[in-house]
Amino acid sequence: MRLGRRWTAAGIIAGGVAFALPASAVPALAGTATRTAPPEPLPLERLFDNRGVSEDSRPGDADLDGSGNSLSAGDLRAAGWTPGRVLDLDGARLTWPRGAGARPDNVVADGQAVRLRGRGEALTFLVAGSAPEGPGAGVSGTGTVRYRDGSSGTYTLTAPDWRAGSAATKAVGLPHLNGTGGQRTEPARLYAVTVPVARGREIASVVLPRDPGPGADLHVFAATLRRSAPGWTGSWGASTAGYTKVGPWTDQTLRLVVHTSAGGPRARIRLANTFAAAPVGIGRATVAVQGNGAAAHGTPVPLTFGGRRGAAIPAGAQLVSDPVDFRVPADTNLLVSVHLPGPVSAAPVHTQATQRSYLSAPGSGDRTGDTGADAYTGTLTTWPFLTGVEVTGGPGTVVALGDSITDGTNSTADANRRWPDVLARRLRAQSEVPAYGVVNSGISANRVVTDVYTGDGVSTVTSGVSALSRLERDALARTGARTVVVFQGINDLRWGTSAQDVIAGLRTLAARAHARGLRVVGATIAPCEGEARCTADADARRQVVNAFLRDSGGVFDAVLDFDAVVRDPQHPARILPAYDSGDHLHPGDAGLRAMAESIDLRTLTG
Image 1 (cartoon, rainbow, N blue to C red):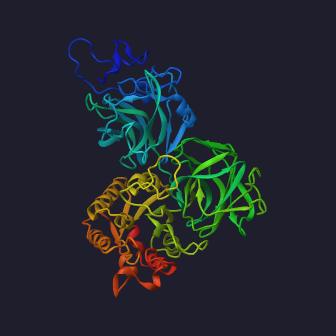
Image 2: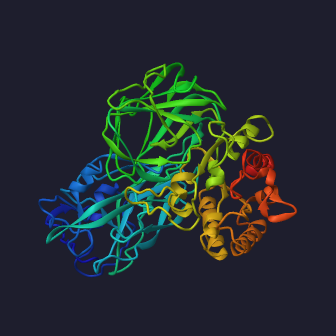
Image 3: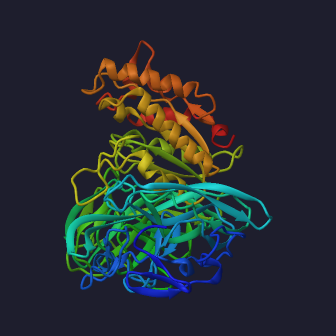
């Protein structure tokens, strides 16, 4: 039992607050302490035995880590994480504890049985690791999923340390710690961690990992079964590449141009406040087919969020609109208009849109319903906040996880000639395999194993966190995901990462996707001789990685040989001149088309 909690015969005293425990959870105070029967599953809130959040006026009232430190209730409110708030994190809906700041708000994992029932594709936990001696390495433990048919399976839950864990994978970051001596400036973090379950099998309960010992604790603040979304397909998507200064935008409307892959009779959008420290208010939003420029073809269709026209997105969270009857055509530009009452001085953005979008003038108000273009006097070449458009009626989604070549850097602007765009058109033009939607999760300058952007704070760096850090958000949590195509590694190699580290990263990406039941297709790394960082040494390491990809021994379900497609047969270390965009690193339109046309579509389905 961790120091800082005091058991009584009827309950527990934590942070000065006493509360009752069910009889099944009270240990024997005399005689043996051996458990004779598994505990009865209880709702997670009934198991809370630790108070980790304190009001700033009483910073010593809570003790998350056994040393008197706690999370700031004021910081959490400033981030939009108010008690009882439902948070959409990586496709899972988690409820922040209703008693946070006043009552116990988390359970220290030690084999407790949690009542969590239903069918889904994964379990998501809102967690943090702590250590009484100061910032630690986090903690992992093995828990059990019990199914209604009497079977069970295990899972591994890893909670990064709340003070020293990576900012790149955090759900929310806070600027202060509270303690017995008052409040001090030091970062604190919480994490949403998702683990696989047996798809289609009904869950009866979940047993948390055992206490790992006196050196660390695993705190669980919330848990949920992430439901699948049958009938929904990703039609368009973009990945958050950074958190940058903007505007400030005050009472303005964004009119973002996106290109669909799959079509369908109903639609919804996804907005994200990734990497943010504060919530952002959404006034109204609409969707329409693009006419000419910022003009809509027909009257824009209003979107709602939980039945309301406006909403706020907490820091680090996402927001999904309600489904709307709006027929989305395939292979068509849409206008997604979002009113920002503001002021908004920083925003999560996808920087390399290769697409012109529009912005109304400061103070112009809600122009989401405008059919005409007159209000949209400014232009954008980024996609702020918007991360997805989804439709009903499709068979599922192929996710292209990659870097700038996947992102479409140096392809023709406003022409939708990225290789995932070409792949989407090929899928729609045939009937041999399902006509999947294609979601582009490429980020320019992104790497497999290195977080170029730290994941914390306003920055001019827009290379994103690593593929390993963003895999859950940008691939596994994508609606309807069936297959992930992994085409990355050149940026790691150009900046000195060893071939062995890149291979290890690719192995981990594939293993994590496989554990979630997805098909994983790898792609060899294209040549780039002639670009400043594509040295002979980098090319030698590229060849090692490509040799692994071509003969991975089952790590990947299939391999696309993009290297063989675009390389110059007379000089294999460089791109064929006809396919070179001119910088010797990125294929141009012809090269991107050749890559997409080389794909045997059957590799996407097995």
